[in-house]
Amino acid sequence: MNYLIDNFDVVSGLTKTHLYLALLPLLVGFALAVPIGVVMHRVSWLRRTTITVASIAYTIPSLALFVTIPGILGLRILDPLNVVIALSMFSAALLVRAMPEALDSVPPTVVDSANAMGFTTIRRTIGVELPLAIPVLVAGIRVVAVTNISLVSVGSVIGIGGLGQLFTQGYQRDYPGEILAGIIAIVVLALFFDALLYLTGRLLTPWTRA
Image (cartoon, rainbow, N blue to C red; front, side, top):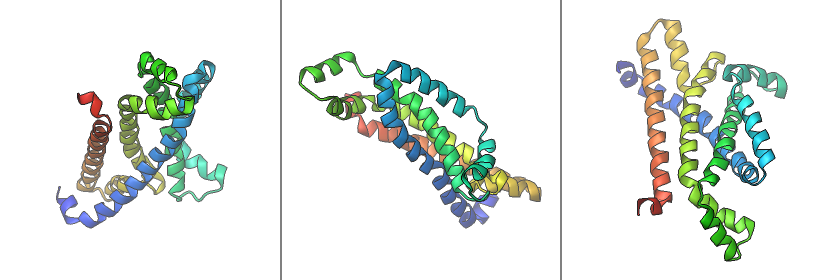
């Protein structure tokens, strides 16, 4: 704790970098997963194929992606974009699987009622199915957010990683206090965003509290 107090400015700066590297991929993955997931929900063979591909993509070690992406895309090894691209792939892989499951949670009677009222497919999806799928979808987003916050620290091995730099620097200096500060900061950050997303989900679905 002494390190956190004595070096609060340093930890704050690393936290900002950490959040950028963790949350930007979450937004990118979400933007990709929603339209893909909606199509998957309607086409069974595409759902099976996409889930298989996403599962394979998620098994690739994150460090391997951090190292190989620069060679494939011609980026510098220390470019933060390497981490953003890799974590965007992981985020999309998880959310693509969560999206059709969230739509599956919508009661068929509600979908039938929307069809009976003359809703078009797009209007029904945006106005009925997606709002009712929020509770399940938010659960998936929470998992991705916490996972990203944890995985960003792996990037410190190649010189990028926000709070993960406290691990490598603490190890190099043989300074356990710095390592402990990094662990505490990352855990607090993960718990904070998990709680924030949970509360956001509750606010967006007032009917679940009725």
